[in-house]
Amino acid sequence: MSHILRMENKSTNEVMAKFHQMDLLEIKEFMKDSGLDVVVKIQTCNDEFVCDECRKLSKIIFTIDEALKTMPIPNMCTNESCRCSWAIQFSEYD
Image 1: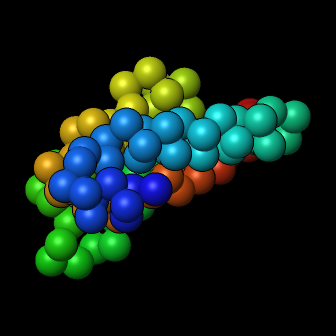
Image 2 (image 1 turned 180 degrees about the vertical axis):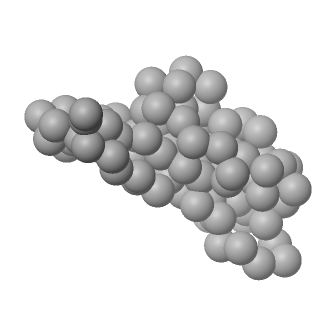
């Protein structure tokens, strides 16, 4: 869908925000009974096409609820063809 929108010179922000929201909700649902403290980070492709904002955001760890509330990607991204995604990080409860 985002490819079609780009071909029509339309914004992909709404579609990509929904995609990232569904990704986070799926992670949250899958991990809810795991006994693990799950946090997420923005995973970039780490190349010359990554915008400065996503590069900065990739250094921040979010709870899933924080990520869902702020939706930093694609909302803070300055690259219309953002390729960033969410990466899960685990740590067991003490």
